[in-house]
Image (tube, rainbow, N blue to C red; front, side):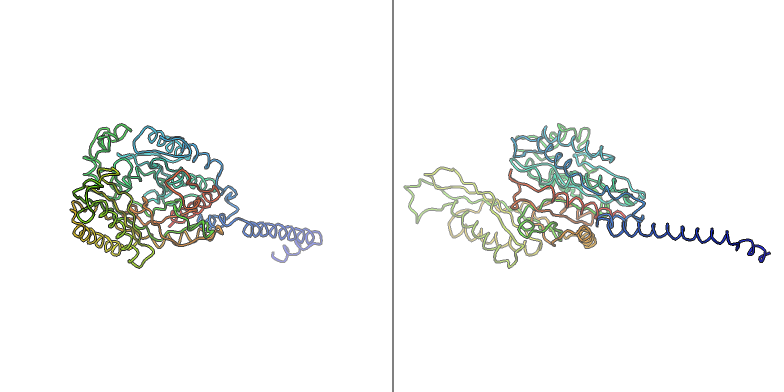
Length: 481
């Protein structure tokens, strides 16, 4: 039977047909292989990375859409800046004011347009979630804040919120499917403007029971309580219990914050991305001296006990102790120095200083605080004034970025052909407190002359676009881990 079949198939006509079929098969096989090679060789680095992260072949997903809508993102930044209590180009947006409430609605709308499910907690931390295909796993989060100190700029914090929403849009358009859910967080009141508490929302989320209790008796400069202000903005309406805001450690598998550098290093060095390895934390100190005061002409110099000069000497001592630490990462600032009675012909009888000293090394920073206190005691004794107050307002520990997240940010930068620099953040960020409940990382982008907290604050849209791409790729990798 086999021989009969063979004789039938091997007729001259059939042989020609068979050879032709083989040629056609080889031809189209080579075309498909060439197409795959072309896509692999010519796709942009972002698409290659997305290909690796997603597990799909490149030609099964349209990665041509892996791009940031820079024009729309810049428009959003400009629109958000209009919710301000001060005229352009400055931005003033203080917690629970009318403009803060309006800006919150704007953010929630953008989250909704991005297809995120939106919720808020009792104090107004806003969450927008994109559910993963294994939603029971701890999610990966990103975000920042949108409140702004008086007469500041429009990029601080805002880039990390609007950029996070755009990163989600980028991943969705690329066809990416997250394993772990991805969540965008807009934190309440990173700035201490109204109630004197920095990173209020993230600090409370990170489990500060002390803050939870303190907020129930906290008032602003107009004697409005925190709870009354929150209720005015539509929060904490039916309860004084804020414990629902607190999260347990492990609530998130990772947190990554995109932010302008707020310093000049990246711009000066011509580097696109800063990969943050640690966040310095401040110790805040309030100091008060008291003397006798007196007439500026009648009181002779040898008999004076000038509270103002004691404060000035302590300010110089702060500088000395910081420089003597031996580390470039130790910094100190006397940001407030008030004198009483503030008359040109009166010797100051009272002086009040507020000091900020920071470091990524907690032991080194605390040693500086101790030396500042010793100097205050010695100066008071030498100048015959009273050291009536030395209060350490807060002494938060610094935070180190998670090694896995650092590696993910570095890999994303390389895949996008963006140069990057490992660096320390010396400014306060919500990431400092998120590190208490989650592995943490930060992505910096350059800003003009390092300006921040002033109207001249500026980040080029190309730099923002680069940051969003690095953020998107980092989130993708962490989501699939």
